[in-house]
Image 1 (tube, rainbow, N blue to C red):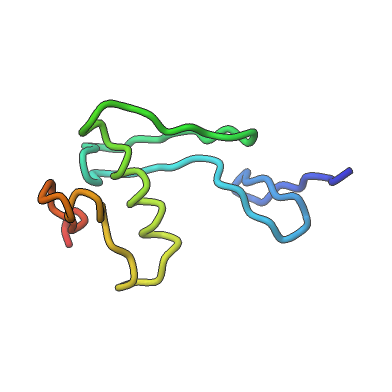
Image 2 (image 1 turned 180 degrees about the horizontal axis):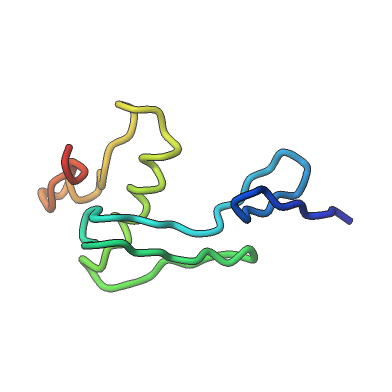
Length: 91
């Protein structure tokens, strides 16, 4: 059994060096205006929605944090299909 610990900001960790995404928070990013927070269940998470609802924008936000600068292709599927701009807001 693994004992969970808690960081000063309330983030839980399992003591084994493994980090888990607990929520996604975006501010004026892609199709999201203002501040938006999406909780991520520890057991798993399924991202669904209609076309243009912001699924790719949320994944782009996560990639922007996890992938080194200059190595991520924002919303590559839309860029390849001639859809929306592949540049992040302000980019």
